[in-house]
Image (cartoon, rainbow, N blue to C red; front, side, top):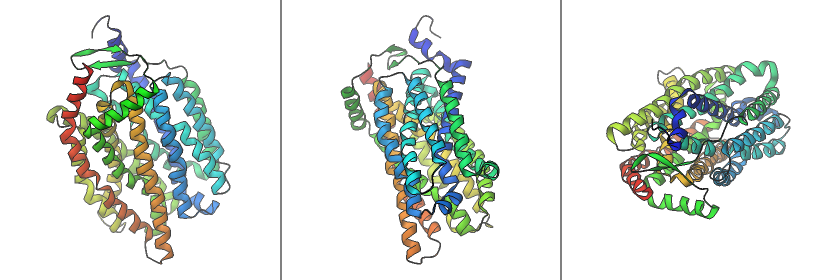
Length: 440
């Protein structure tokens, strides 16, 4: 520890209890974020019939309606993150999305659910860009994979918690009551966020482990920095494109609970409970494997975390395919369910650690927001909307097992991520060294 260096002191909590507590609270908010986001998909077998939604309408609600606002506002929020108090921005965002989550419980048709879902995206769009920016200033660069991976636990835990809510609280509160309760919890956490202090912004140097404070860049400088980062770091672009390809399957997966019930014969409450346990164990193990494994892989090979993702995606591809074509009594079915959630967990930490490392520090929030925009809009939103449309077409044509065929098709499409991560990993070290030289 370097005595008297304010920039080192700013990152010191990464090695102390205060740093762990800070990370834990932001991870809790990310859990809430994904519970709110996933709750509609988890309650699909209740909401779709009660509101009389078509598959296309459901795909729009879980995809385009939410994500257009989420991603477009996310890029704007990313520029605010690079200029304003980040902890207060997060508090405002949590408060907005939580209030609108409660309002969603009052929906009675497509339009009345679409309106609050759209603006929930505005509130949620601030959390991850602000959190990633804070992590980049608060924790050592060689621990960013672990830090990002722990924060990324919010994805599998949030998905699992949404399914646990379906399995254990729906019988008592109903799906509407669950939305009301979740909104109230979020408002309380938003108030608590106001008590967390902002972390000083730092600029890491290639020739020193110390860091120097930076001034707030203008909006024009931020956008120019984003364009420059994408132009001069092919590994960054390839990693984002690989993440988009994989996220297409995540978007289509909003129909997974409907698939379990309508084409695999499960009871809707029973499969929600089973899926929750697979999500919690598979997702957490995958997230830890992605965070720690990606860091270890990079330290030992110096190739880059995208190459780590290449090997993981390649190894799990056969299980992803098998899940869609075998029956539930097959020995490959439940391992396939486990690896779906494991793969989701592995993906998060290495992807966003790579984005952080290849983004110039002064525009890190904007670059992260841009990556989220690409993943959410061209990955998850596109996957959900296209999957819903394809399912409708297959049903109208009388094709058997439309959910199975659609999910299998998206599984093959998502494999485009494998070569993209491969080439991103090969290029990573060269691009990172170029970024470090430009910071001198």
